[in-house]
Length: 342
Image (cartoon, rainbow, N blue to C red; front, side, top):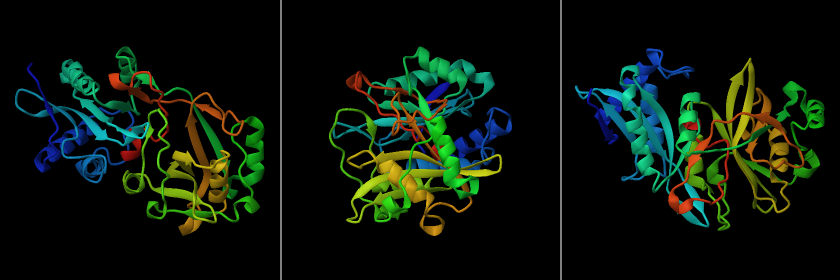
């Protein structure tokens, strides 16, 4: 059977086709663990708006993905791409996040063609896959993608889950780290909207990292299906100390706030301790959802956070570097990938 692999143009007509295909793929049982709304075209149209229309990193010529069409020009496969802002040594790094690689079972023979088109982009773009299935992980490893590495989680119970006595027990296990006291955070202020935040300029160090600024932070806060909140900590002179993007998730009846993107700007490395100490003590419109039982911070790498190893956790993060960036160290964060934009 002949197939056509075409770049996504993202016209309104094409988006409707893509949305209908993706929702139908899910309804037919093609996705192992569907999310709420995955089986409705309107949800996919929302996602495409987040990926391509409201995304400050997506420009007129940015790749948006590929369509697989059969002999009758019907959509039988989709491989989406989301432009994302990265930098190295103060210079922008062209980057794409893969999303929603769906191909009908009867057309799986064309999968490698879609992969080949993505690999062509890898000559110029840093490519990130943050939600690879087990099958895709094995394929990415064969294609030379690098794994994000070790991930650890740190748990901070709110008063609903035992508060600071429970935190002390987790501290003894090494599954959390010390947070600042109420006296230590008294002179700091929590801001919950990126418009109130002034991101420090990158230091110009060589290394590949996310380059989020007010526009892209606002985009991430507005996008995605799960509720979320920006947390920024400033000192008495309104200088930035640390920030994080918290995404709320509910599991086994408990609401948790996952700090997926975080930066520490404190000269002594205590910014996240101060930020989390302030978050735990600030609830409601000015801070944490009062129904939250647990704040969870994740990080990648072999290092510890304030001397604590954290709780080991799995990771689906893989990435590819273009030839011009081979050998350059990449900083990995839990926010990387498409899950925050679904």
